[in-house]
Length: 458
Ligand SMILES: *Cc1c(COP(=O)(O)O)cnc(C)c1O
Image (cartoon, rainbow, N blue to C red):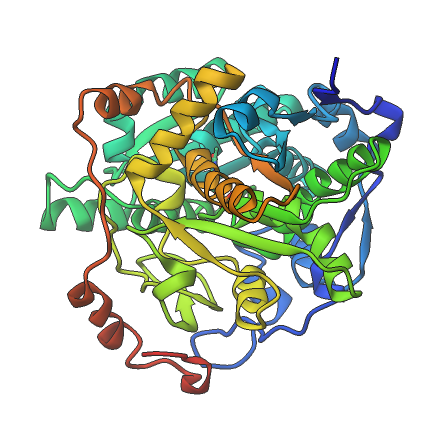
């Protein structure tokens, strides 16, 4: 029998995370005055130990023993060779994936939820607030907070709250509390509801609500947690790629191609950054983040300074952004509907070290269903976007007659997203491509940008 799965023992789990900031130069985040922010500026929002990680340029960070203990509930995650999928595609390419769907909440988000809950706990924080789109991050953080005995409050984007009721059930099973956003609990929420009572909500609004509530707690015991985009999140996710390298070593393989879907960039970065390190040091390897054509942050939006949320609470981050007021088309990959992109992913794209791609919704589902019918596992709508591009590379390998080794992140399973699959099977899902008219809205959004020289195309 051919090798189908590669496992590591718990002893072989990586003991350190890799920090890409040791190996690339970044523009700093800016405050409202247009000057680089200080660690203290972030202190009302995040605990100081995580702020230090956010700003650190040390290449390696030790993973605390208490964090490893919780991660070992499901890690190391399996490396899987998708042999039946390869056969169906009739490709000479070998296709491997890191199966991050085996975590309790069903996605890679638990890899950062656990350390974030831990660092807040040891800093003396009693309660975390956050936002969630499709519900994956909210459920991951509820699970992690439950492990460390702290409270978790989740603002869930209204449209997903209504579409995916079982995500709320999961959060409650782990002891979290979830409300639809916009809510009546915050000034931001009340203001939005007054203007548009029937709004479907957005991630930008939900982030504003969560930050407002964290900063507004006068006891000082509440902080906010973010599931993607920030440097410390990318850091925690590198355990994916560090494990993958050990697993590929065991079977004598090295990837030619790395692929991950990119919403805020974290599952992609988690797999890719340890390989980006190799690429910076001379390895020949192609690295592709894949986004939806409906929310083409890396492939069409300018590289600029923008806020992470609609109410402009966050510092200005140097990133590819569609503008903090952007509300994308209602594609079902909720985790890929964010207006911005991790600053480190944006920087690597600007330097040409990684090469962004975009795929349409129907191609994504087609690839996802093919995986389900061959390998059995049903992917999350986000993961389907990575898969659509895997299919494209597998076809190219066939045309060229080359035995390419492709490695991608299977970021999560789709068992809570089956309503979206129902729509796909009923022919009710559409392709969306951002229109030129919408693209031109960028210009007004970035009118007051403090660093116009960072703008590529606006
Ligand atoms: C949140 C999520 C994503 C997108 O977020 P990234 O930070 O880009 O990884 C992708 N896949 C799944 C399953 C998710 O839950």
